[in-house]
Image (tube, rainbow over all chains, first blue to last red; front, top):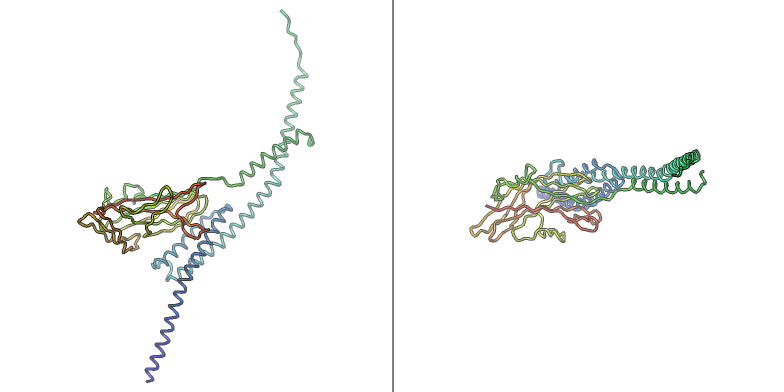
Length: 163
Length: 201
């Protein structure tokens, strides 16, 4: 009787653990695929955004490809770089999130730099350059006019003899 | 001199020209957007597409192909190379309307390419379970692509032993959050696909 009761308690406990583990796994797979989609989309968007700012995204693309490889390992169930489905998804998501962070940082830095260069170009370099060029052109023109005038003034007039 | 009409005219002209040059140099230049897709054999030529010189292959034969993609879209692209197996009568992709083949893909490889970057994806296809019947019909039941077994294909042909592997290029659209078959280049849509025929022996 005591042995039977003990068996029943152990069996119930094992079943409960198994059900919980199974439910957790299913939940992880469902949530995992949503996370994968969201983080992949976000990472790609941020890479494109950083690239549009003029950043060199080669290293980010390399990391993105590694994260995709982890997703594929999870999908195919052939685990080489990670021990299980959940671990592959977690690692992939972590990589994707780090790509989002790094590309945002890179993009922001380059955008700020680009804005600074643009502002300097349009407010300082272009007006100063135009002014300097205009002075040179006007001075050159005036020197040429003065030289031509002097040339005409110093000319001798010779009358052609009539035949 | 600085208040003369001549100086103001010259300054105005120089300012306009330099402003245009600065604006043009800081902006991006428009370019044609495209992705290339090509399939070759193991030695990167079309001569080695088949194990022998003819496209006749049988059970156990392996086709060693390389799919080359090159991104010239002006930005990073996340692409999927989808392999479809068609019989002699199934619809191939529509070149004019840029529609993919309606058949389901049996294998997919995904890769991200930065602008101007190229990649080579090996495709090792082993004909695992194929059969040619006495009435000249044929069936492909299972293949292995890059070590992945694809069973229960059941792609059949009546009165023909000809099959086609179609390789389609899909790209990820971040707005639609899904892979799409086409891309826009100016006002036109573009797509890329390859087709390689085999005949079962």
